[in-house]
Image 1: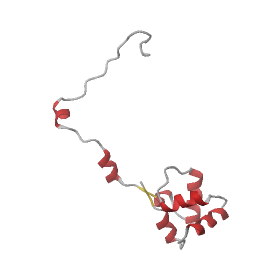
Image 2 (image 1 turned 60 degrees about the vertical axis):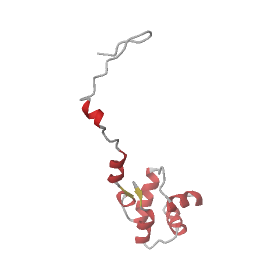
Image 3 (image 1 turned 90 degrees about the horizontal axis):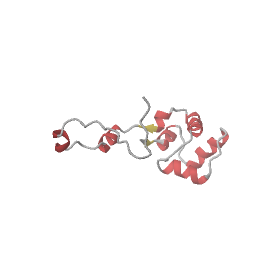
Image 4 (image 1 turned 180 degrees about the vertical axis):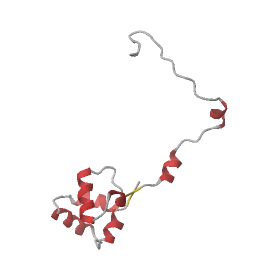
Length: 107
């Protein structure tokens, strides 16, 4: 995912994080200067849904405008199949081992 807050804010004529912070406060969302700086300069690792809702209301946008999917990056993270894995055939089923202090799974 790519965080697109600055571009969406610029489309609304908001060029500084302090201006967005003031508008968010007017809408009822008080954000600390540090948190606002993190939202403005980078991609947040987490964001509360309530905060995202206020951001979208203030910026007159939808969450898909702020969060842009990057399927190429997801595809690049998938492990590639090796030639030995393909040659060995389908994976073998896992059979449970019953030992001391173990019970059979429910039927």
